[in-house]
Length: 72
Image (cartoon, rainbow, N blue to C red; front, side, top):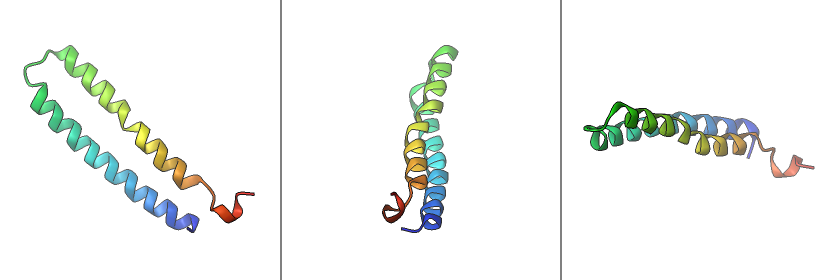
């Protein structure tokens, strides 16, 4: 797969990941944390704010790996 195409696909995936992840994290917070204290909210948003990095790292790693023919 050409590098430009991989970067385009990766960029679109990253944008979609951030949008979907933010919506899901917000929906979970609204549904589950309505009666919780501010400390619980802080911990939830801190952890959920860091958790999206894992799939984003995988997408970025996939984007920058060279094609199989030029890996040597």
